[in-house]
Image (cartoon, rainbow, N blue to C red; front, side):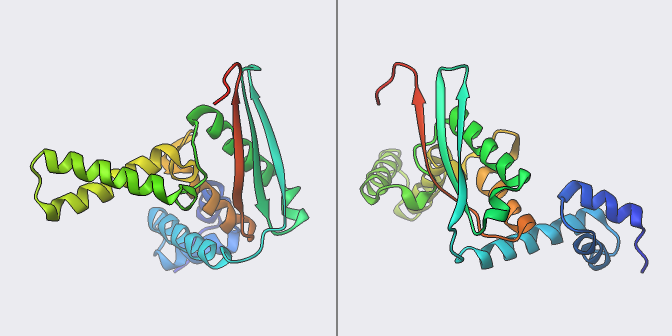
Length: 198
């Protein structure tokens, strides 16, 4: 099957990946762009998972101020200075700082939530389900679902991304890992609100 350069270019513009990656995906998908995008997404996630263990010793600290009333400092790490100076990496850091300013997450990811808070939430959710008369087998599933929703509220990487609600902030980071070819981690952030000392 022959894939036109126009189709490859269209997929490249949507994904930002190399022409070769896009062509391979379209060949594998029989020319179907949607299937090609799904293949690229899966490959990107696979690549991101493989890179997750690599050490991130470079990066940058992004500072963002919203009307002088909300301020964010966010540290995003990568493997090399070359990527840290890349405009797309800088844009990612800026977008994540905007996310922190707008959505006020408390933690970077679920692994950063203190275990005592996780256990407390689980108890609350289970108690609530039991008072509604739910059977014990269902209580466990309810607790898992509510814990996932809680993480989507309070964890930066689990929140719906402010520029694309169909993706999480974590999806955006993983797609950038696949695109730039390096591990990227959001290590920490702080959010200031004028006059608030919480």
